[in-house]
Structures are given as C-alpha cells and as structure tokens.
Amino acid sequence: MKIYICLLKLCDFLTFSSTIGFATIGGVSYTVYKPQPYIHNYALMYGFSGLLHVSLASPAKEIREIDYRFLNDIERKIYVYPARPRKLVIKRMLLNIKGEGLVETQLRPKSIYPWHVAHVYFGPGSVFETVLLVFDDSFKIPRNIRIGVKRQGVFTVECREAIVKNLVNGFTDPVNLGDILKSSMNPDSYVVLLSTRTRRRNVPYSNVIVKAYYKEPRIHLLSTSIDGREVEFRVPLLSVK
Image (tube, rainbow, N blue to C red; front, side):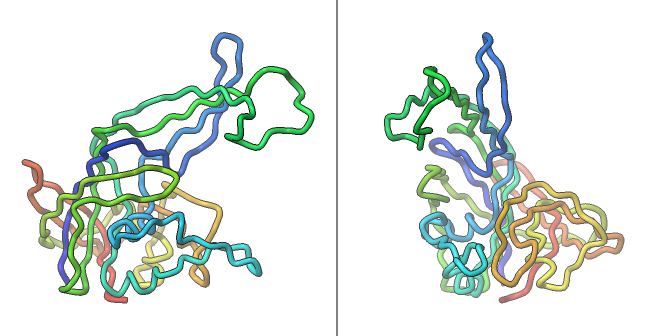
C-alpha cells in the first residue's frame, strides 16, 4: 500500500452537500443554499477512478437507499478520504426562477412574484486536501478529476507520497464513519461534519463524515511536502478491501 496526500485545486465552480437557509434582503425573502466545506469521499473515489458519481447512483426501490455501483471494485484499488478545505473562494449567485422549465412550479401559484434563490458556492481558486491510499500498483493517479454531472467540480490533482510519522490520539481529520466502523477502527466518540439522508446498503453511517475521537493512540499522523509547504493529516489507515 502507498499513501499519498493530494491537493485538489478547483478550476470552475462547485456546489456540494448544501444546507438550506433563508435570508431577507430589501424586504424580499430568499431561499439560500450554502455548501459545507467538506467533500464526501465516495464522490472523490468515483472522481479518482474516472467515473461520474451522480450518474452511477441508482435508487434501490425496495429499501429506498442508494446503491453505489462499482464502489466495491474501486475499493480494491484505492481508498480516498473525505477532503478538507485549505483555501475557499466563496461566490454568490441570485436566481429569479419564473417557471421557464428550470424547476417544477405549483399549478396554482400563490404569488405572481418569481421564486428568489441564492446559491453560495465555491469558485475557482478554492483548494482542498485529501489522503489517497493505493492498493494496486497499476493504478495511475489522474491529473484531473470531476466529482459530479450536476456540480461541475473539475479539479487539478497534485499528489505526493506521505510517510507515517507517529501514532497519536485525539481527533482525526474528516473520515467516513461507516468505513472506519467496517474496518474495526471504532472511535470513542465523534463529531458529525457532513451528513446525508441516504445510507450505503448494509453499512450503517456510511454517508456520515465525522471527526472521530480516540483516547488511545490509533491515529496515523501522515506528513509530506507539497506545493511549498508541509502538510499533515491525522487519520486511521484502513486496510485493503
């Protein structure tokens, strides 16, 4: 297994795992979609494998969950941790949606005014960091990835091989809770950073991104030099799938 720390530099715009809020400007109420500053590792694993995450997610009708096709095959070659932000360029776009086919509208609108929606998103120049584990020596790290057909999300990728400096305790960097539980790396506690409504089949909490806490030294302190600076990550290393 080889361990890499990777920089993901955003080339266009990205809206991802947004929360919904409301704002009032000039007496007009707006729905506001604001992204969380973390990127889910399943989307990144599809991106590093050259696949589009959204187009490969199909609903399983009998249990109303998402079946992540091809994910098991990807995990035999690589594992990507959730990405944390290094630098965020925040942009804001106000949309006035009047029913021109952009969204479904009510058959009998209560008001003649358009629907005002504000989208907060990450713009070009935003930089994220992640950890990549490579289990298959034939795997080639891509120079560019895209993490969804609906989100643009085109990144350049720069990776450097990392070393394990030590085993430490405390809080980790972002990890997928379901994956560390599956690897018997059960934390003593955790703080939720990013959560979605669906779950990977037969793996509870797989869509929950957390900072895990360990009382004992079970966290691998990773380090490398990339883009002119030393970068460290604190994560439990998962085994080959």
